[in-house]
Length: 296
Length: 85
Image (cartoon, rainbow over all chains, first blue to last red; front, side, top):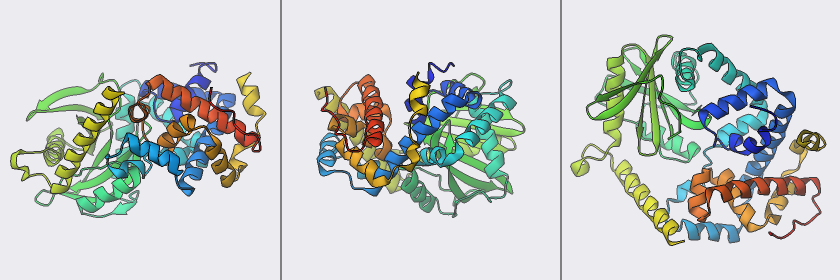
């Protein structure tokens, strides 16, 4: 990546719209180029100011009405909790250097053997999961409480599996990120062994380096890195990833528990009503958007 | 050349929030909309494109232009933004 390319990419970089590969290239360039890093810091400051200013003031009525006309019956919560604030405030409050260095260190350490996503997930599991819960921002064993906490901060619903009759116990969670996108991080414990669960919006990345397995109709992708077993799967517009030091089988079991807990079933018996209602609401919202887009 | 332009800027972090809010209010609606959706709603470019029913490329160019206009407003807070062309 060259200095000439940076001005054209910087907005998408700060908005989290670049591919993982391009984001990593940009990380590398910013770490090496002081003048581009100054541009990044200046742009990040502008982004941060807009967020702070807009949060502190009500949205002008004229604008609010226009947006409402566009998404008149969509879920109201979508407009409120900003889901990328974590990234932006992090960047603005001076952690550009740290983020760049962490990104680079992670990539260089593991790039020869593993994809950046695997390196990131394994690194965060070791950081948050194996630290006995010290990095958690919210401690609770209630999946619904945890889900509501995530939604309030990320702006999108996060479905966590019910583990009431399972050997896993929910310990709590924190706001994290996956491939520079804000993500929910929930920590479980199964027989003294931590299991990390990441939930974020679906992100484009290469599946090379991951082993695909079909288990009970679910499409799971596996990898193992530095003793950490990793699995990810997609569901609708979400990316789920779990990590644990241990055998693949218990992680598969956990993944299937998450998948079953989030899917509708005939009669809806296994699905909490809250999730069923949200699924219907999301489907209706998508239909409305599609209809509007076709009509215009 | 771009670097020189950026280096010539005052530290933008020092801008008072009310000044930023006023500058936001002065932005023409076609530029303010995607900016607010991206920053406050946290919507992706694709989602903004669907909400505003404009092409993805237009979302990107309006965001780019919006930020340039905003930056220029913050450097010269008393100047009014020209109407959208």
